[in-house]
Image (tube, rainbow over all chains, first blue to last red; front, top):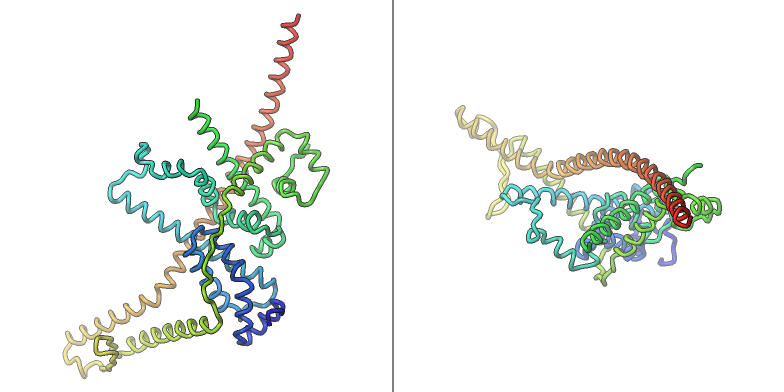
Length: 195
Length: 197
């Protein structure tokens, strides 16, 4: 069964043939895990999300009509799950920040000893670039992950996100401009610090 | 002279497809060069931030397991719905150390006076509320997510408009910088000539 095309496997899985679904899982599990890890940067979260993505695939497989490729469809589920995860994380962060403020800590404390995050960032040269990518809006980050890290073509990304190629390119431009601006600000700060 | 669009600059950066006319324009247009340098720097940052994927254990995912999970979920949802309906119909459902038990009491048989009837009604109402809360939790979460999604979309539209405006300024600024640099060069050349004379 391993030699069958995705479309055939999907048809068989829709009829309840468990082995066909298992072959699809074997075919895509590693790819989806890599994509998700590049988005969330955490092993446990990535593994949980992958499990969730395949469960959603399983539940919705019956509705898959084959209008797009199966790979695009499952990647779309994965990207949407990652974006949802990031949104939930953001809400939780905002709530934690509110708790800190409610307890009377000043989050706008710019003293050197208060800037714990900054101290760690200075220790790790890699930290600021990772942070810059993580801080991108979710729709820009997903294009960066798919185009630059997963090396997908613009047509593939367009099919996965169901948006025109021009929109994807424009989004990549915005993402890279944002990252470029972060790099310049960083350079200005470092040069200012040296003088 | 028409400047290169965002998509065209991305095409040049990613090398797809190769277009000599664009390359020529880029070689001759300082504002476009400045925008191109910015996204090239962005690409360097993105590449530098590429996560190194660690070895991860493969979780066992299979059709049989998911079928079982889906069945449990469906049974739980149906059970909760049935309990809610029964509770609203007047059945009293209890789940304690002795196990699950169910009773039925019609108004007026168990509750003989007005106060008892009100208390019985309140109890049933509370049970119904509790069961309903469990059922609606998922729906609440979904709506909560939808509100945030809408907020993000609105923010996205606003950010896009703002970015376009900034791009406009950026372009004007790049053009102004080029003119300024040319003026400075001209001035420097004049000074040099004067010094020689």
